Image 1 (tube, rainbow, N blue to C red):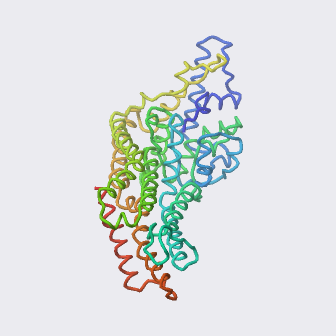
Image 2: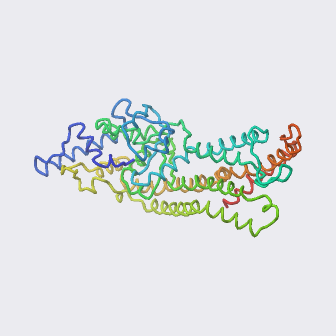
Image 3: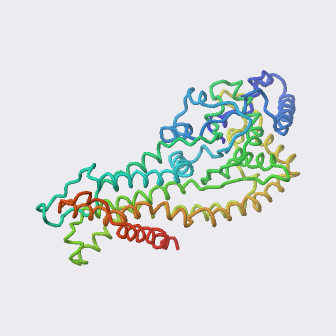
Length: 452
């Protein structure tokens, strides 16, 4: 969680909201230090209780609202954001992230994780509808560059399905509204009401206890922030011996990679449509292959760059978890020497959070060991079985199946229309079966070979 507003004071704001601490040093330093110690002990007791501190303080939002306007909540704060949350007893997914990371990359990853499966399916369905409407003559596409009785110059396959599929994919990826309930700190905690904010902070373990799963949007700053590690600790502690801790760790570079690949593939396919049919059929490989290589190099350059960064980030994440030590994490209060901007003293969040972890796991070292074993094992299993999988490559190759199905369908429609045959846009059953078989074989068998 650890946003900039919570970093600046956090529990100190909570104590101030209760009136239990004004941050002054009227008495001796020893007395002030003793007061802070007692206050910190009280905070530890409240947090370890793992209960909500007020009715209806446990809140969530639909995932679609968190992703609205390309994740505006991650980029710009507003008093209106909290109004979209609702009280609940169960939260489907707790989104844990560091506010010190790149918010744009984080948003793209969240969009991919939530909309990356539905967007290609809808785009494919709409593209196939466009094919049917085109071949039926309801979506006219006049071929240019030849006389009416000649072979069309550009192209045999209609742009309708390619262009419509590409546009629909982008729209669904950005605008689809998942309904599952999620916790996002800036949306579920009233950042502009000090009392409500303090109650929510002290109820943070209760938020995690009410969550069915934990999504960690990892970036290089995540394991360096104490609050982020505390969220993992609270979630692990909230699971009973019979419950499995459902933790999903995803590097934030995952989104840019998997979103850019199908877009780049669509751009290549659309670009190759401008190659004249005569050039493709003449076997002029000295022109065709360099042209295809040029399209692919330009379209996939950014994707390949991000893919390399992704693998480097995965390697970095493995090293960080193997060497994880909670005591090395950073905390805002210690960075400013426990003083607010106006010179008043503040309580130490580090002592509070580490005390909670010690009570939950017996010692900080025990928690470190659990992260280095269970969380690392969870990450290794997920990266090996849930990232760069066969299914994901099938999703990324959706533009290919549209392209392979289209030429027989459209070319048959063109040739029969040219002869004036009634209902000539309908393919004979054997032609349709052959076209679909070739497309499915290429999509299911050839494209995933690139994943090897």
